[in-house]
Length: 367
Length: 187
Figure 1 (cartoon, rainbow over the protein chains, first blue to last red):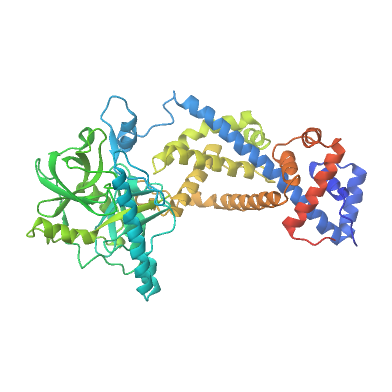
Figure 2: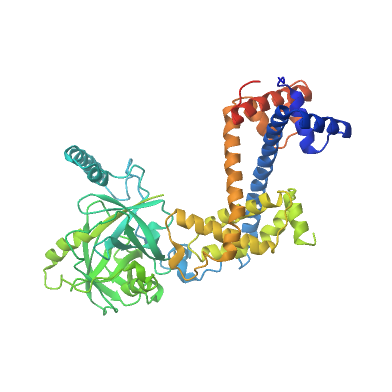
């Protein structure tokens, strides 16, 4: 039976849904629905749509109501202790920045946008031009390489991911098969994390574990059979704490190219006497979050995490003890064994740096 | 409101005082837990509100009866949603101190959460179809179903001479929406 699409069926459906149909009308409708299956199906479609529209509207209004209630709760909660019970230590990087009159910390994560490099404080026009040239050169180099590569897989690794980078830091290898360590605050909140190796290849990584309190995160390269550089990781990880005055050096990415810095341990405890950290006299800049700190022997003693905002020469670094602790919490099947043998001890500093570059990467984070 | 069942019924009906009572009572616990498990305050807000919507949806379905306390339900659903989000962001929570991701009670709420997701998807599609109608239908339907305006108000706002004309236009829009949504041919 052909039914004209007019307001009647909508009217009936609305009334039926709202329960406002009169007894006689309801009886007539039931009779029709029973006897005319085509009409019944049509009627059901109408009712379903109206119900969905009604429910969607109610839920939408419920959600707005929740948001309004939340604002009230937030205002009330500012006075009450209930909402914020995290011990100061865990969020010291954030709360410290807010506390007035205390030493401020700057976390060493650069935040920048690839397409339009913003002029950083103090950088001259010359530097800016230089940076842009570098990007153009790199892009051109990448394109040239793309033409000569025969394997598609290879080319995918060389091309940078499409989206805009939101943050960057440094990560370095724990094992040659693709486990790395960096700061938790570098990868926190990221949609995807990539590392850029010495050869300029990008590899997607996922975060396998982290400890917010000590600010370390463990990454794993997604690609199977990935290997770092030329064989086993050549540095070892110091088991205990280094002495006051120990000479140290670091490699990191405050810019696209790797940067070397050196200094010494100026205190065996870090920010606010945190025993899990060192205070170092070592220049560090945004982008160096997660960089390794090594002693003269070529042993990793710490991971750069932050520096004093008033003085970029004072750097705080997480001791390897926190790294050992985190590794201990992992299930045995993960099989992450830190290198036992240190092969950098006898080499000159320049030679140590040369080897380390194969195992130190820039981290690019997309949010 | 004396019993939790009464409270939920009032909340399902859209009463603000009921929603406030539930929110104030249970938001702090959930927030504390999320922030102790790798989340920020903004995450806690998102997750808790989503859990409230799950509860809202469930309480509006037929034959609804909550078999546990509201607080227990909201907490369990929030945890579940948070773990799902962490997994989606590839941040495995398994190596943190509190490994509560796979307890039996959490899996019990999976049905509710799946139903919620299906509902949300359905609503998204509906909203998209409404947008495709163009004007004046899109705004007219939104005024009626989202902003809950009366036919009188709509007639005034949209410049119809009387509410009945506005109603006729609404039905015409609904017909177009139905065709769009169900992909039916004109009969």
